[in-house]
Length: 63
Image (cartoon, rainbow, N blue to C red; front, side, top):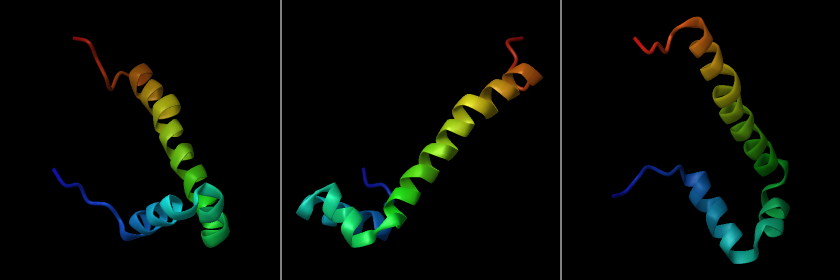
């Protein structure tokens, strides 16, 4: 099964396979680190803040 993968991720993957993570950061700079940080910021916000908040407010009920 084929999933959609943005072109920039394919490009970053090719660079990483060629020279490793240090080479990727040298080529693309702070954009890679910012993308990594934002991904985990959004993921953890949903996982640790939004889901418990909705559970407490009664959005997820066990009735």
